[in-house]
Image (cartoon, rainbow, N blue to C red; front, side, top):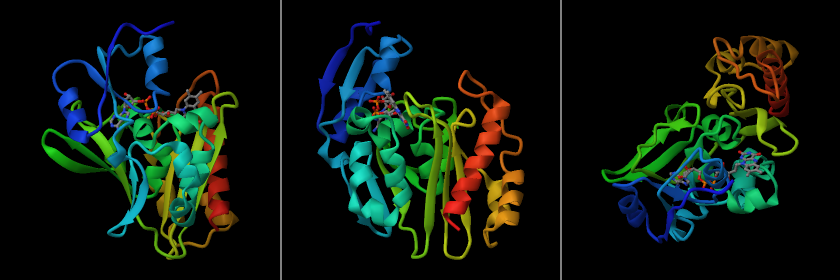
Length: 277
Ligand SMILES: Cc1cc2nc3c(=O)[nH]c(=O)nc-3n(C[C@H](O)[C@H](O)[C@H](O)COP(=O)(O)OP(=O)(O)OC[C@H]3O[C@@H](n4cnc5c(N)ncnc54)[C@H](O)[C@@H]3O)c2cc1C
C-alpha cells in the first residue's frame, strides 16, 4: 500500500517544529521507521510531515550537570557505538545494537521510538530502568517527564500534541552500578516479545523494567522490593521472579500467548538479575 497524499517540510530548529505542529494535522518525521509503515497501512494519515532530522541541536550524546543527555534525534546506531554510553550505560549500547537491522539502526531514533511507544520497543524498558526523564518542548516551554509517567498505554504517551521530545536525561550511574538488558526477540523484526532491563546500584538498590509484556513498558516495583538490598542468589532470584508481574495484564498475540509470555518474562528477569550479580 502507499500512503495518502501529504505535504513535506524539512526544518532546522525546535521552534520551527513547534510552530509547524500547531494548527493542522502535521506529524513529526524522524527516522520514519515506525511512522512510514503506519502511513503505508493508512493507520496514520497526517496531512503534513515535519522532518526533524535536520535539527542538529537534537543529535548527539553528552554528560552535563550529573546527567547523560541523549538528543532525541540520535540514531540507535550512534548510541550503540558511543564511548560515553558504553562506559557509563552499557545496557543502552547493548540494547541499541539489538534493535532491528542495520538500516533500522541507522535511521531510527531514540526520540521517535519513545514517542511511538510501541509495546514491543526496547528503549522504553531502558529509560524506565535508568530513572531517566524525557525532556520535551512545546508552546509553553520545556518540561521534564519522568519515564514512569511518560508511558500511559498502547502507543500512548503523556506527550501533548504540540510538544516535541528534545532529549533523554539519565542520572549518571554512581561507580559500581551494573546493568543488563535481556530480550527474547521476534526473529524477523527483532522487536521484543519480552525485554527486561535491570540497573543494580552498589548499595543493592535494583530497578527492574519490562517491555513487550503489556500495553506499555513498566517498572516492576514488587520484584524490585524483594531483591533490593539483598544478595543476588538462587533464593532471592526465585523470590523476585515469583513476585514479578503481579496484577499485570499480559499481552497475548500470534507470537506468544499470555501464559507463555509471562513464563518468558520471568525467565528473562532471572537472566538479567544473574547478569548484574
Ligand atoms: C523492520 C523493523 C524492525 C524494527 N525492530 C525494532 C526492534 O527490534 N526494537 C525496537 O525498539 N524498534 C524496532 N523498530 C522500530 C524502530 O526502532 C523505529 O525507528 C522507532 O520505533 C521509531 O523511531 P523513528 O526515528 O523511526 O521515528 P518515526 O517513525 O519517524 O516516528 C515515530 C513517531 O514518533 C513521532 N516522533 C518522532 N520523533 C519525535 C520527537 N523527537 N518528538 C515527538 N515525537 C516524535 C512521529 O511523529 C511518529 O508519530 C523496527 C522497525 C522496523 C521497520
